[in-house]
Image (tube, rainbow, N blue to C red; front, side):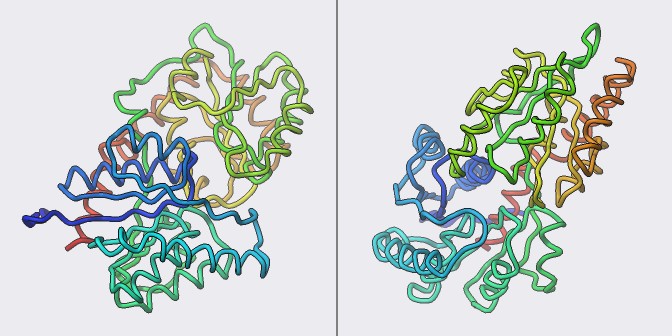
Length: 371
C-alpha cells in the first residue's frame, strides 16, 4: 500500500511520556524512523533523558517537556488532579506545535489527555499507543477515546491487550513489537559448546513488578552461576533498586543501564535470559531479544510474555520454585539439545520479530492512520 506524499509532507507530532530509554521509547524511535522514511515531518514532545538524546542525535525535531510525576501502581485522587493540570499545562504550552500536526501520536497513557484536548479544541486527528497492561479504569479511558470522531486509532502491542478491549471497532490495531536496530544483523551462535550453563541475565527496569527479587532464591541455590542484571530503577523506586543491590549475594552482578545488550551478553558469555515479571506484561521485548541473541529463556507465564514464549518455543514457569527446577533441568541437558533449542527460537524470532518486520508493521500502520 503506497501513500502519495503531497507537496507539503504530512506532519506527525509524537507525544512521549518518559525521557528514559525503555521498551516503549525504543518503539517510539522506530516509529519516528518509519515516519521519516515515509517522507513525513516529525516532531517529538518528550522529557529530557537518553531517549531524547538519541532522537536529537538522529536529527529529529525534539521539543523538551516536563515529565508527569505520578506514583507507580494505583493512582489516588491527588494523582488525578496532578495529571489533569499537568496535561492542561502541556497542551497550552505546546499549542503552537500541536496546531501544525496532521496527526498526533500519543505514545503511552500519561499524555493521553493532551491528545484528547488537541482533538477537542484544535480538531486534530489523534492516535493512542498502549504499552502497558492497565487497570479497568485505564481501559475505560481508552474506550472513551473511541467516541471521538477524530480518534484515528488505538494501538495495542499484543493479542493479550486486544482482549482487554472487546469492542469490534476497526480503529483498534494490533501491532506487535519487535527488535530495534541494535539487534539487526544478528547471527545464530552456539553458546553451549564446551561451556556449561553458568551465566544468566535479567534485562530491564529494576522494580518489584519486574521480579528481579527472584534472585534471592536463585543465587544461593546456584552458587557456581553468575546472574547479571542489566538495568536501573529508571522511573521506578530507586530505594528498591539500591536495597536489592545491597541484599543479594556476590554472584549477582548489577551492571546498570546497558545500551549494547547483545555485545555485553557476548562479552559475559551469557547463556540464559530470565524473564521473571510478577505482573501481566503487555508484550515482552526480552523474549524476542533472548531468542535473537541465541540464548535460552525462562519466562514467567503472565500476560503477553507467555504468548510470545509459546510462539518462539521458549521455556516457561509459574512459581519461583518452578524456576529453580527449570534451571536444574536445563543444566542437565546435553549441549547439542540446548543449542538446537536456541537455534529454532532464533529462526522464529528473525522471521516474525526482526527489525525489518517491525518496520513493515509500523510503516503500514502510519500509512493507514494518515490515509
